[in-house]
Image 1 (cartoon, rainbow over the protein chains, first blue to last red):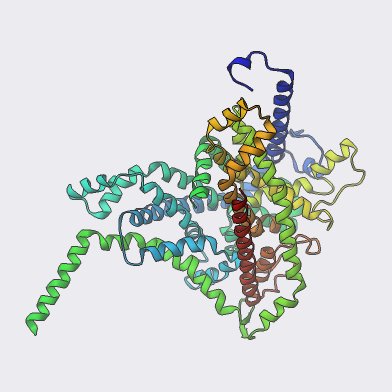
Image 2: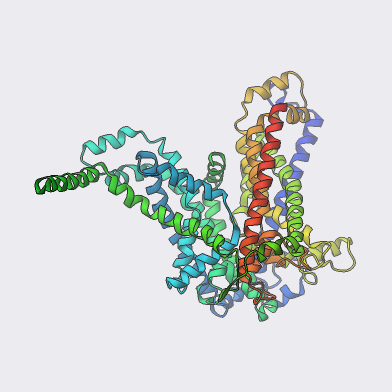
Amino acid sequence: MSSKNTGAVKSVGVKIGIGCIYIFLISVVLLTIYPIVYIIMGSFKDNQELLLGGLNILPKKFVISNYVNAWNLGNFGQYTMNSIFISLSVMIITLLISSMAGYCFDRKDFFMKNFIYGLMIAFMFINVGSISLRPLFELAVKLKLNNSLWGVIFISAGASQAANIFLVRSFMKTIPKELDESARIDGCTFFQIYWKVILPLLKPILATIALLSFRSAWNEYILPLVFTMSNAKLRPLTVGVVSLRNSGDGAAAWNIMFAGSAISIIPIVIIYCLTSKHFMSGLTAGAVKG
Amino acid sequence: MSEKNTKHKLLFSERVKQSYNRGDISVWLMMFPAILMLVVVSVYPFIWIFKYVAYDYNGFVAYFVGFDNFKRVLTDTQFWGSVVHTFEYAILKLVFILPLALAAAVLLSQKLRGSSLFRGIFFLPTVISAAIYSMIFYFIFASYNGVLNGMLNAIGLIDSPIDWLGNPKIAMISVVIVAIWGGYGNYMILFISGLAGIPEDIYESSKIDGANAIQTFFKITLPMLGPMLKIILMLAITTSLKDYESILVMTGGGPNDRTQVMFSYIYQLTFGSDVNSSSVQIGYGAVLSIVAAIIIAIITVIYLKISKKLDDVY
């Protein structure tokens, strides 16, 4: 009942209806952002204020020392570097693997192609949970990968590759094969066609994959938890914050944990604010086609 | 003979060259990382599990125990308790998260002012790590200095602080609240993309026929959403049965195993819990993983059967 003829004189009922809708939406907004605002504002409160509780959203006294302490004393400097290293590596590896495999799947017939593809899709659904990390951890120990972050990186990239290959493969269908043909006539090899012709055209889908893989690696918890149980130096932020709570002196270190949580949230929220459309389109593309 | 041999060799090298020109070798080189990942990260652990189902394995030594692990499943009340909790958790979560997500999606699909801003905010929790937002709620739920008890106290709803995560009667509800907060944005976006596929003129004609908003929703929006709704439901059911990360962070399955779900129990069997890290029983964990996977598969099949029946009705 919104369109042109009634637009000027909306009935009282419609106005109340729209009012109710806004009240509903705004209360959902408040409930949604409250925890985020709470943790970020809380990270600027001093520890005494945090441990006393209270309903103030804004800190009584605005202190920055939580961040300094977390960074220097709480090892969060190291944790942050680990998180950045893991996420960027996973992102780059994922982009390379998924674009190459998606290109091959769409443009070539090769031995057991459908079997390999089917296996990938099947393992997207076969999920035995955390137990599969046990053999991978033991394998990493054997290969001496457990003293670096590469074990976490490879597993994180490998576990999510099927969905990304799927995205690339379906995007490849929109790139005309005539482009490959003409590049081949110009003397490009199969790899050169990928590198010089296809890769630049895949940019939109690769941007989505980059964001999604960065986010999931940044947010990963169980996998790095298992791999860094005896090696605190390698922990990313997620594991760092939770394990500080579980350690003996954690109960009193609310300020450090607040700062650590905020350090973990702020970068990904900023990235999200700048690129929210890509996040949402990536989600729907994966779900609808998968 | 020798002539034949050289001819064959020539053919072979020619064939190599030919296949190089066709890009066959490049294909395998380019597929190699993906295949390696598939084999190492997905196939190998899957096979490994089946090897250890017959062992009592604590991470250092493995003893062959035959079918003991399987027999133990039948009498393990802790596991079947966790199965019940898994269903309780999943049902509670779905009952609230799907209507909330659908309501938000329907409202934001109208051309309201600021709807893309609302959408952006509602989706925000899904970009944050489950471990971190579980920690945030751990602080919010804290019984003595937590802000939730503070608020309820200030309004006058409670006199004494509620132990949100430590009280066996309430812990499950607290855990579900966090799951709803962290996940509804996902389903909202999926619903919105489903709603976008419904042609505008159907709404136009229903408006001309004088249908009100509620009639339009039940007679047009829901049925037209059908196929997409089925995918979303399937996704929602399977993911909520597999959730355990935030439970592990917030309660570790406690208090008194009240929030222990299948996968948090299996996690603690395979990697030890904070309380008892010496109780690692990987062989038994492997058996339970298979049982859990079968339970989820059965639920999925039942769901597919039911949704097909619904199709026939329409």
